[in-house]
Image (tube, rainbow, N blue to C red; front, top):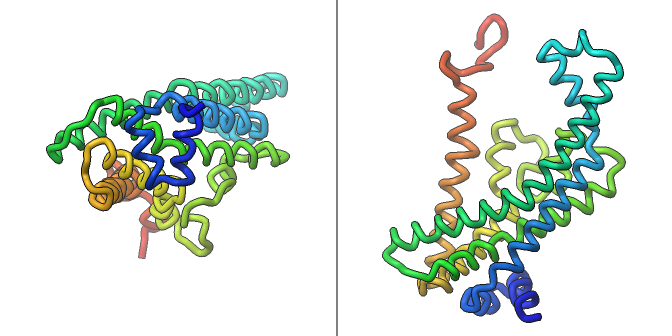
Amino acid sequence: MSSIVQPTRVLLDPLDATGAAIEARRWVWPLLLLAVCVSASGTAFSLRWDAGPAVVQQMQMTGQLGRATETEITEEIQTASRKALVAGIAKGVFVMPLLTLVLAAALWVVAWLVDRSAPFGQLMSAAALAMLPIALYHLIFALCALAQHSLSETGVMDLVPSSLAALNGLSPKMVKVLRGVDFFNLWSVALLGLGFSSATGMSKGRSVLLFVVLYILFVGVFFIGLPAMMAEGPGGPRGAGGPGGGR
């Protein structure tokens, strides 16, 4: 029972419970909880997702809409819903455990860079425990999704408003940036810092600060840098103005 209770206490008492969970190398239960919650959110999304508009838009872009019958369009919509269900479960069962393993490997690299050492089992525990807030987010998302009559792709991002991107009056670029200031992500980063501290012996303050800085760099690269590079493309910035050019 302690293998189940001890990791979940990390969400309620991270300062005291994290060290004990890392020392005991409790990573199996958090990983299972993550897989179940992510699979549940993917299943809930597929059950409530209105795939019709997205499928019709895709068929229109590929030129298939004009040649397709009503029956074929209906089959495409059903196929898209089934694919969403399979993809959601696969994300929980395969992608998230693999991502946690990659995160543990990244922790090992960070420990090597700062001249610290720790057993990989403890680093794996730190990574798995840090994913508990993400599991909680997906559990909340699943409950909110099931409470909806239907879901659109545009409404999914705002179903659980946990980031500053939910503020009104923001530009599209600022919305993308502020999605990185997310409550569950920052909670996960703090747990990652505390777990790294318990595994390597680094002070808690320095460890949390280190991972906050790394997270800021991550947001800068993946929320700002890469989207800007993709928007520019080989021919310069897109959308700089209307058909007549910008003023």
